[in-house]
Every structure is written in C-alpha cells, then in structure tokens.
Image 1: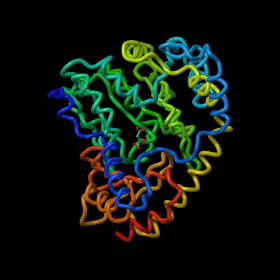
Image 2 (image 1 turned 60 degrees about the vertical axis):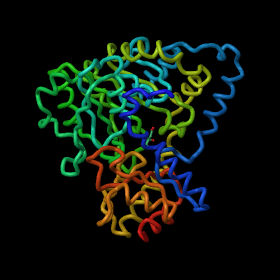
Image 3 (image 1 turned 180 degrees about the vertical axis):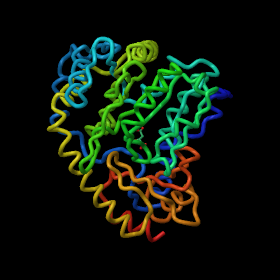
Image 4 (image 1 turned 120 degrees about the vertical axis):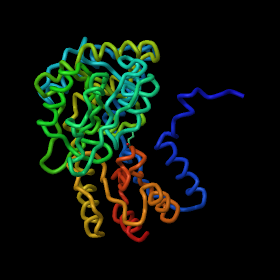
Length: 383
Ligand code: MLT
C-alpha cells in the first residue's frame, strides 16, 4: 500500500544487515557459525566502565533529556583525551560534540553541508554509510579508488577539477576499514592543501585509532598543520573500549563543521543519554589502563591470524591497526560467491570486499573479533 521513497528504493540492503540475515538462515539449518564478519568485539566492555555507568544510572538527574551537544564535562574529557593522546588542542565549547556513535555523525554530516547535486569524495572500498548519507542528502558520490599499488590511499592527483569544484565533503578513514591500511603524514598534508584550495570539509573517520599493533601508533588528522581549518574528526567508544552496543562517540575539530553537524542533530535527536556520557568520561580519563589489555588481546589474535593465513598461503598485508585482514579471494571466485559459499558450507562469516564498493572486488575481509582463529582459517582453506 505504501510506496517507498525513491531514495530508499535505490538503496541496496545495508551490508551488515544482509550478512546477518544470511547468517540466521545458515544457523537455522544447525550449522555452527564462526563470525569474522562485522567489527563487533566479542570481549566485554571493561567492568570499570560498566560500574561507572551503573553509578550514573542511579542518579535521577541523569534520567532527563541530556544536553544536545553533550555535557560540558563530557566535551572537556574529550578535549583532554585529544591533548594527551594526540597533542591536539580543542575548545570543548565549540570544537567537541557528543554523538550517538560515530555512524550517526557520519550519517548526519552531509545534511549539514551537501545540497542537491553537490559532491562528496568517498573512498572505495569504504564504510557504506559515507555514500548512503550523501545520497540521502541529495548529493552525488565521487568514488576515490583505494588500490593496492597506492597502499590503499586515494590518488588525489586523478580527481578532476570539475569534481573538486563541486565537492563539499571528503571522507577519509585511516586506520582504514576495510583494508587496514594506514596513512602517511605526507598524504594528510596533501589532503589539507586540497581542502584549503577547493574549500571543502574533510571528515576524518578515526574510529580505529586505538586498535594498533607492534610499534605503530596511529595519529589524528588534526595533528597536521592547518587541519583544524578544514577538518572534523569522528571517534567512537565502540572499538576503543568494546562498547559497540552502547552507541556513543564524538566529533571534534573545525568549529563550522561541528556547528553544522550539531545543528542537524538538535533537530533529529536529543543527545546522548547522560549516564552514558558519564561512563564515557570515565573511559576517556582512564584510557591507558582500560585500553591496554584490550589491545593486548587483539595483538595476540592479529599475530595468530597472520601466521595462520601465511601458512595457508593467502595473499594479504599484515595490519598495523584495526581488527581487519584484507585478503585476496582465491582464484575462481568473486568475493560475494566466495563469502556465500564459506558461510553456507563452513559456517564462516567473512565480509565480501565488493560489499564495500566495486574496488573491493577480489578481496574478502576477516575481522579478528572472534577467538576461533585457527579453526576459521583451516575451514577457509578447506573450501
Ligand atoms: C564494520 O564491521 O565495518 C563496522 O564495525 C561496522 C560499523 O562500525 O558500523
């Protein structure tokens, strides 16, 4: 009876919702599932954060509407964390904004800056929300291919001037989902130059900054000279503190960017539950103690996965950050067929590369948010 809007009709199913649906089908057949699909940590949220939330829940003052942009204390904790972790100065009042998870911020951002026919620059493969959010706002997506030969970093020189002139937002995401690539300072400097020249906003999705390995430690885009003139950065508690279900994140950086996103949000949501913000403050104030044991677990899994994949002769680059392994699909398959067969016959969930965009074809993504690593690789190998 009800006709869906054209914008919804045009949309493919959300990648992870579709995988979830297939997973349920296979589960119902009695097949045991090992889920290496979505980057959703299986490890519980640290108990100190849960206790901080429990305490905050008991306070009736926290049961009322929260402040739209986040309490000043929350934004102050964000600013202090940025200073300590990245050496970046932020004004809590005008340069920090609480989000209901970074996905929410990404999804709303184009509404603030993109008019009909404006362009956004979006990495391909990339987090699907950059594109759908652009389409919802009536904008046009220009894909920036992430190719192995360029270290999965976009080639800025090939973007046409006519596109750059119409660009309102450029999305970048390092450490990268899905390829796990990292960006160089040189690349970031060039992004700042380009954004200043063409007057677009850079949205740096830094959700994976705290999931790093070996001797590598990711930086913030805002560490780059001039970055605050052109960029906001989005962060999430999800990956850093195993808090995917809690839905809390934040955006920081350029005042106008934060103002625009905040203005959209005041009209569509009522802010982050105050008790959650207080748990978030606890997490940020104690991030070193809380994050280290989490990173240790992922470091062990990363090493184990690298070894298992190498032994099984898979083609991949060892990640320095993120939960993800970006692995070449074996000969004779495309990424969707491979992932489907793996799920149906072996109960292993991986994400087909093409789900992140056409340039993801030929790859599949493994997420190490599951401890059954050797068993999973043996099953993948035996397909
Ligand atoms: C992913 O697996 O790509 C992400 O976890 C999805 C998300 O953060 O929404």
